[in-house]
Image 1 (tube, rainbow, N blue to C red):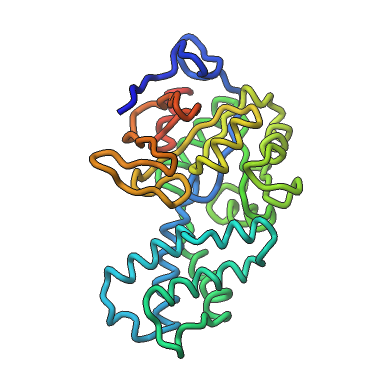
Image 2 (cartoon, rainbow, N blue to C red):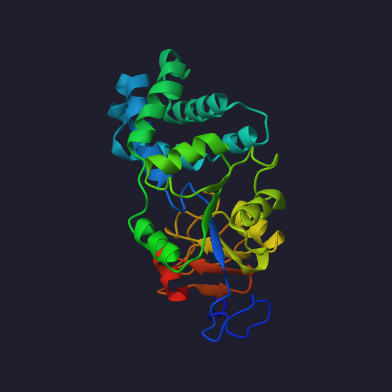
Length: 286
């Protein structure tokens, strides 16, 4: 196991104040699975929708359905990234994920082709009904606002959709929302991060970026000159949905161990980022 420390006077750690915390004037957040518990919403909507698509699927038992829901939410074959790259429409990526799930469950021919009405329209209504902030998010964001620091969102979905989502979960007060279409490039390109900083009117080097993806959030924020903070809420649910447990400590796709949540952010020198187990840890920097 690699050593861990809090970043005080350590090579590679960002500029810090006397307490060891990075100096920051504003914060940008990823939205899905950082502020919003999207995977839980997706799993719930998937379970209802797949049972409507294939009424006999429940005979398989609870565990196969649970595993299929997890894989669907994690998008293990990367269809959403093909949507971000412009290779699929939003509806097409949803249907492709549903087709993978049905195939994996062994659906008969009559139920193996996803019904577009079910998976595009009805699923959307279901998933929206399950949208929820993680429990601590609202209170922590209020504390950030009370500190006088601006808050924004940079997300890899289209701006209009994500603004509506933010409003639906009580974050309509966040004016700065940068989507994958706002500046013509998604994360990890530097452009959306820099657009977020411009919206906040903060310098990148004094702006936190908090997200759950090592590739899109941590690497992208670091490359754009922001202070990257990796949110790891569930050590079994790693950066891009592809991690596996190994011994007593799980690992991320690069093979590094993922350490458990701590009360304050921890500097991860091997990744060049801070790590938190929930947004509660940011209170140590307020």
